[in-house]
Amino acid sequence: ERMQHPFKMKSKKLREQQHKMISSINETNQYEVLSNKITPYWESSYEEELESKQQTCEDIINHVLDKFSLKKKDSRTILDFIIPSPIRDAYRNKDEFSVWPGLDGNPKTVGFFVGSPAVGKVVCVPPTYIKCIRESHKKIAKIYEDFIRSSPLPVSYQLYDGGFWRNIVVRSNDKGDHMTTVITNPRGFTPEQITEQESCLQEYFSQHLPSLSLFHQSCPHVKCSRDQATIRHLSGQAYLKESMCDLEFRISPDSFFQLNKHAAEILFQKVVQLAGPKHYTTLLDLYCGTGAMSLLFSPRVRGCVGVELGVAAVEDAKHNAQINNITNCTFVEGRVEEKLSGVLKNLDHSPSIIAVVNPGRGGAGESAISLLRQHPNIHKVIYVSCKPDNPLTMKNFVQLCERVGTGSKPFHLTKAIPFDLFPYTDHRELVLCFEKR
Image (tube, rainbow, N blue to C red; front, side):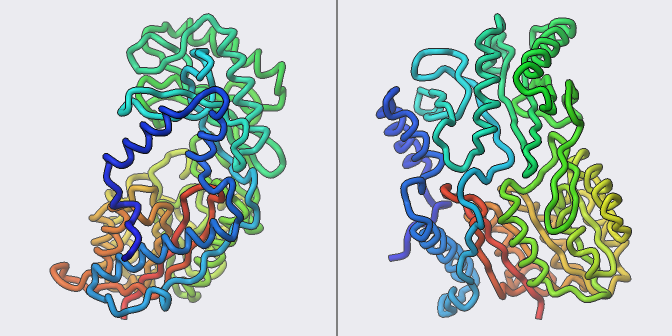
């Protein structure tokens, strides 16, 4: 009997797992419990981890084939073997740490949650032994913890609880440069009080990490874009710089960049190989982030058009094209679902279009997938999924390939390649190639 798909797991079972986890945690085993939650393969060999992830990807492809009534087709003719990450430890170049009471009762503990409000209890455990996190990120989290513990202002656990200090985001590059954004809750505090705390924050971090790029976002919501809440630059460099695939990149505090750069380099090169672009091809780069895919394709195609919601990411993408002396890439700011129709009208005279779709975990909007299907010159779609077992992502796959009721020629799933971009965790990246025949 086929293994149950992760996306079919009932919420009741998840709540039972959370309840069991929070019921068993104590000060002695807290680091082990956190490791089991965040990095369930921390005690496994890498071969065992890859084998398990390969099986999960096979289940996903089988599920897709079942939807198309292709049960007789063997998923192994479509699915390649998983490509491992070249590094397994300390690969993450970005981490976000939360603040909540710890098991010792301290209300200002920085780390990760164990439990959830749904099961009635949450505790925060420091990231001390999480293998995929860089030691320098753990150090910055501890410095922040020491700072807020010395501050008279309380932590904000809920938006209206009168607290101030919230999460901290830490980023770094291969050269060892670091960028940190401290997020606070402005509700109930005057601009003068907030400015005073920024000064305290800047002074404290400058004593411990003088070269740190430090930012502050005063966010009154659960999460804020820079349009909703300005990200203020307090000290250090305004951007991180990183190299990837022999290209240089500028990264803003809120721009997306692949968490595992070294594994992402392999993935990008494989995407180019799968796409097989010609000199007359136009690349349509959807959810393009800081423009990495477009810049990598640029010498192989007629031109590239990237679409991205994040304002800072689009600014970075344009700058990245400039510093790499690339002139055939255009980047459009806005929601893909809102901008795609206009972008495609401008590409009506392009004889051959390849679309690379690289959305977040929630997948692409139905309207975007519909437009890709309807355009006569899009003959290939490379879908890069960071959560291929998400029901919304699965719906994208089905929508691309369904045969009736769409009024357009369907794509066919011809190849799927899994990548382990997130060693130790349950996550895997899946690159799928869809082609029209």
